[in-house]
Image 1: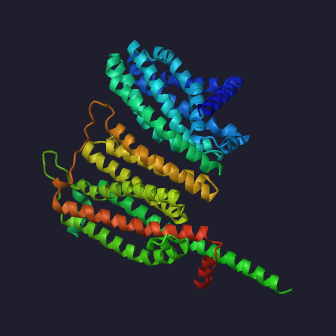
Image 2: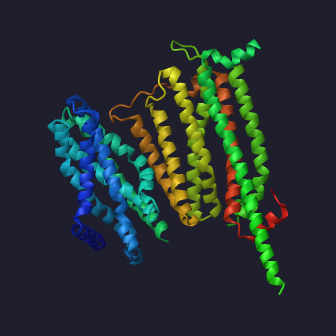
Image 3: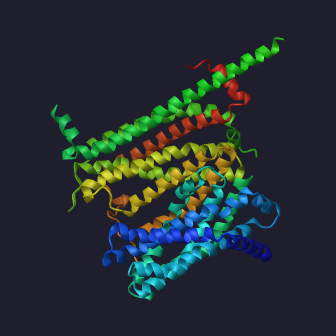
Length: 223
Length: 63
Length: 253
């Protein structure tokens, strides 16, 4: 059964490696949004330190949402998705594999680039560490929940903007606790532990439930 | 007239009270009116459709 | 299935039944809302006591609380019908969910509007990110998302099922979202601006509030059934019973 998971994951990663710009676009979108805020609100250290956690998380939300549009779209257009559905393999595993690939390509780079953002916003070392951990726990939740929206809006005109409308409200809990963790993490890493525990709980719950919802959504959209 | 004026003034908070109640009344009335109009439009469209189809059938029967 | 209600799951039998019920709900709604209006304005004290006295503007709560309650209740009903539709594959349930959504969105908007107006004199600002009002805002987004997704899909079968799934996902997320808004710090929850319990409320005020809510509820029934009848007619336009109905109803202008 896990062979299905690995082969879909491997295929998606391979495809993405052939078209690296897609991955880089998301990453640069994140960097640009984060870099624009200081230009808009001023470069005072105190202000940036207050705004930093929220800005990083809102930018992560938007970046992950923009990338979602392509999660199933290419496979839907060339008919691969329909073929995958017909293989009789559990659809939940297929969606989980696709979401995992999507996260490795769009979520993980955000985690790795976080120290750069910390520098831009004059965050303390412990805040940067918390930011990396919280992004590591939170961005997969975003990908998992977002996959439901991506599956529901598959092949619709103006799907991207509709996706934002459907999915962004559902991202609120991750935003609240992700940004909250970075905020209290500025003092000491240990302060952020309850927040990180909650994010981990969200991740477990999303892993258990979201793939079922997104595979049901895929069925609805393709039938 | 005085009690009416007093009632409308709402102890000096007329603007707040009546804008809240006014918006509620306006939205409920707009929803009702638009629903009624919608229904009339649907009925008109369907009966027109039916009449068109009816004449077509009629013509089809003749020859 | 031989249950009596399954007979009414057919649009053809439900349509005339809804038509008979609508006037009853209109009468009930008008009577209850007018009673609540009278009671709220003439049988209640002009200001609420306490150190931080609420003056005349507190009367906004009669519609504010009523519409906030209705907005949540209607979302629950929407999800219930959506789930029934997905499980039993009954067309009428999807149409019901679809008919509830706009009325729910209107009440959510009213709860926000009246809450903001009430907030101005009592908190000194229209919008203070009060957890309850913020939750109401999120609920509004959920309604808008449902309506937008449904209207974006041309195929009505897919639209019904996709929007229903979205509504169910939304309901699963709602407790988490509300909780995260209420307690942004996991160690302690934010204090609400105004704590309230129904037990502490003056009897006359409570009566007006509950009557207004009931009135709004009856109003929701009336508008939902009206919208439902429109949806049934549009979707079943090709069936013989609708065509018979149109013929017998004569020629509306």
